Image 1 (cartoon, rainbow, N blue to C red):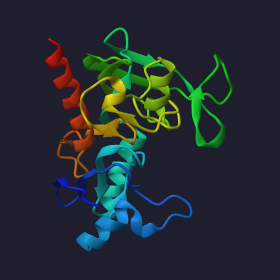
Image 2 (cartoon, one colour):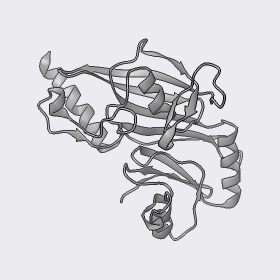
Image 3 (spheres, one colour):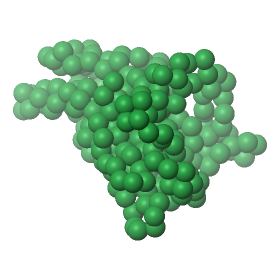
Image 4 (cartoon, rainbow, N blue to C red):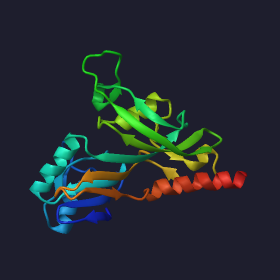
Length: 240
């Protein structure tokens, strides 16, 4: 596993998590396979977890390097002082191209979330800003690259909001019932394929633990997602 270091100082470590790796082990999973454990082993230092992203999401993950930084960062997340930006490949394009999805969520069976009914007890406020960066027309469906900024941090929020808008992630086994997409299935003359969530944690901005302003860390689009975007763009250029 390679998790390139994006930024580090005496308080924090930010890395680019690859898809397929958990930040911390789930129940009955071997701890040694988690991102935290592997980083601690390779760097020979303890690390504190302050947030997580899904196993099959790539992108920025931030760790604290001491207990004081952990407390400060955890408080920042709790008080919603953190700005997150994700990039998503979706099936279909949102209309209008820019806006906010405001849709309360509710827990569902088997660890899933669902849109809440109006006035439903136990519903959780959820809001996501979005901006469409590009749209490609293919033989099978339109595919869009969307920038997402969650205003709240509910479980699976981005995935459920996109599905509710009828523009689900291009690959999402849980909410779109699709665990793989091949470029050729979209009518593209390319071998690019994706077998994981088409979601990438592109940027994270937090207050610095020492109080000296804010820190923004960005992770380049993961190679597999970038290759798929390149295939879509190549096909569009060839058609014009």
